[in-house]
Length: 342
Image 1 (cartoon, rainbow, N blue to C red):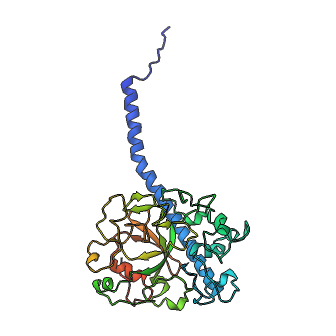
Image 2: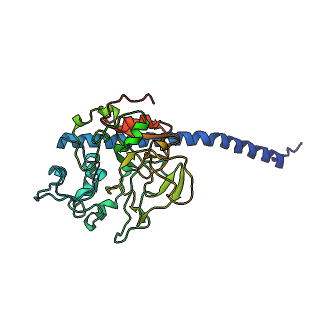
C-alpha cells in the first residue's frame, strides 16, 4: 500500500497568505472608519436635535426661548429672566448659569436639579451646592467624534470630582464689528439684530427672530472646549488656568459661540498668541469660518463639516469652507439679507 504524506505550507506560501490578509485589512480599514464616522455624525446631529427641541419646549412653558447664558449678578434685569428657578426674592438676584443647565428638565435630566440636595440657581454653577450636579456626565452633551475625555483636568480646587464637559453650545451672535460687515459689502445690523436665536441675559421671543427661525443658527459644535484645538491640532491643555478660567464645563456660563471668524493663516507656536477673532475688514482676507479654533467659534471633529441646529430645530452640516458672508447672515437674526446658497 501507498502511504499518503501530507505536506504543510512552505514559508513562502505563508508569507504570501499573510501579505494578502494585510492588503485586505488595509483596504477594509478606511471603509470601516468611514462607516464609524458616519454613525458618529448621525449621533452628534441627533444630540443637537434633542437640545434644539428642549429649547422650544422651554419656550412653550415660559413664553420665550431660554437665555444662552446668564453671566451677571445685576438686579436691573427683567425680573422674569430666571422665572424657571422659582426666584421669589425682591429685588431679584442673579447667578452665573449656562444654557445646558437650564434645559436639563427638557432632555429628561431634571433629576440632576433635584437629587443630592438639589441644584441652587441663586448661586453660581461652580458653587459648592452645585458641584455634584456639575460633575455628572450627560451623554446628550457629548459628540462621539471628540477624542478628548469629557472632564476638566486638573480638577479645580475645592472639587472632589471633575466638572464634566459638553461639545454643544448656544450661538449668541454674529461678528459685532461694523468694519467687518462693511468689508463684506453689507450694512451693519446693530444690536439686537446681530444677535442669534439665543442671547445672553434674556429670554428671546420668537417674533424677535425677524429673519426667521429656519434662517438663523441657534446651537452648534465647539468640541473639546476644555482644551485648545486649532485646525485639527491640540495646541494647549487649557483645563483650569488663571488666564482662561474653567473651560468647557457644561454648566458654566462662559461657553457660548460667537460666529466672528478666525484670523488666518493659523500658525502653531504652542500658545494661543497666534490665534485671534476677525475684527477688521483687512482680516477678512484669509479668514477661516469653521473648524479653525474651538475657543468660542464653530469647531467640530468631523472631517470637512460642523453640525449646527437652526432656530426651527432642523440640523444641518455646514461645510468648513463656508464664506464669511454666508456665516454672518446665518448667525444674525435680523440683518434682513437673504442667506447665501452655501
